[in-house]
Image (cartoon, rainbow, N blue to C red; front, side):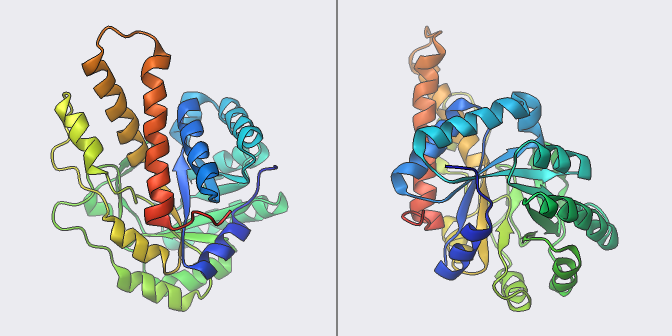
Length: 309
């Protein structure tokens, strides 16, 4: 199967009241765990690559891993650039085989965000690639994204129509209270569904994206802390809130931190129980299985996209 864009995925997701999982990949075990779960659950799939992942694993290695996953599973996969910060990195990914890119101009003033996003859209569409833009700024830290709580800003619904119409983006990431990383909330988690509802009214049928939407699964945080971790108070987005968002206009939900936590918890537990192991296959095999279990849970119980391939 060839690589695909997210356009048809999002159309079906919007009409069906579910969301597509966009899972960040960094190495072979993560790619395998994600794609094995998606194949078994017959789920549509977006694999996304951050700037940090491209620096760590190199573009060509990640693309070859994804090509191998397609050959192995027969899945139709969309490959997406997560948080492209400028035109050049988006162009590199488009020219390098990605079928979707995100241009994150949210740090710029509104007019400059529009100008940058339209530049990427014009180039991407000429190559048959789709584009995700962003309005509003999420707090938190993840790879090259670092926004302090005081600098975070909810999306202004009054801006979404002009932004989408002027830029021609295919989907829009909005800020309604999610946050990058594992430490998302100081008090009770709360998402601004009123903003999402207003955006949905102003952009009927248009696919919305949620970043920073890992739920920080407590079972993995507990294992990490048990074996020497330093994650007291880590708190993610409650899964019932994500299910509600997926039933509305949200067609893509990004998941990264939960994958990292599952992999790290598995490896920490393995070395605590078998400190003499030095064969990577012995500790990476259960880590890959942990990734698979997390993804399966998300596909079925959070996103609702199982059986929708």
